[in-house]
Image (cartoon, rainbow, N blue to C red; front, top):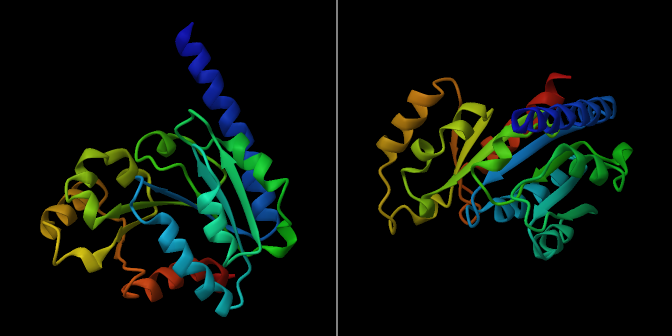
Amino acid sequence: MQVTVIENVMKLNDEIAAMNRAKLSGAGIFTVDLIGAPGSGKTALLEATLPRLTQRKQRCAVIVGDLATQRDADRMAKFCPQVVQINTGKGCHLEANHVHQGLERLDLAAIDVLFIENVGNLICPVGFDLGQDVKVGVFSISGGDDKAAKHPHLVVAAGLLLLTKTDLLPHCPFDMDLFRADIARLNPTVNLLRLSPRTGEGLDAWIDFLLAPRAAK
């Protein structure tokens, strides 16, 4: 019986995710599900990303998932006119229904790029389709060089991996060769971008990645 319940939950999530994807695709929106641990720098990355996309004439929106508070949403609102905060309480990830509700509060006709900043977690969010175009996994220098090996499902599922806070490399023990080797073993085709919102390293390549689908159209 427990297996049946779990299967039904995932089936319902996937059905709602398909509805989200159809709605987003129909509106011409490129959607990114950003997955990373607490403190990995997701919000700081978006703070650096949103103004750069605005300069490139891209209209952005953010759905922010968090257990409690709207502090991240308040930070995003300084750079983006459309921000929706979703508090999951004890829930450790966003589900498709959360995103479905968030879309109802957004003007989709005024969005080119939608970011879903998932709840800080490297495990639970990976298995839930939200209707996104791509999952982007976020690791950080301060998180340690073993995190890719310890969280293989994110590495496998990601369409892009980011390594943030590279400005901390001189101050934190981090074996870059080991980190890259773990990723290559788990997902040989995924690209890894090194980023530092503080110094600007890698941000141009990140923006190019976000704009590539629209450029192709």
